[in-house]
Image (tube, rainbow, N blue to C red; front, side, top):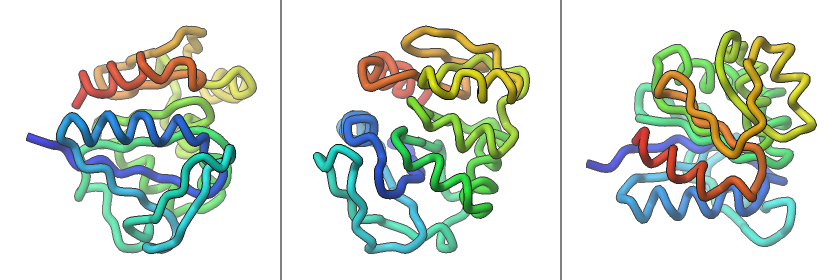
Length: 170
């Protein structure tokens, strides 16, 4: 049975870090719901290779309506973490032990949600110190799965491993 995956995303996301996993999730029978400030808004990837029309506004959704959370990288997570609504939404998935998939800069949202202390994770090299300061046991490897809940990866090069482990959890 397909799962419902909340995807928090805004402009300047890393194109392939959204499109490739989202396509793989859909192909496997899961539903990917994009969430930003408002439904119907069109956002664009930082490489201008992908445009996404947002399915739901953050005020229209509740974490309990979803089975998992997906946080693509790029500049999107840094922008979203300035909005407390996205931080609370993200934290709820971690607190409820639901699957969370964060690639590249995606863990920035988890840092702001204060949900990574004592966790094994990875992320883009430029956020390594931020992750360590948040209490993460940082691993420089293509994919890290922590407590059968959290899947993290570093860069677009890691997408195949990220998809594989995310689908395993689903």
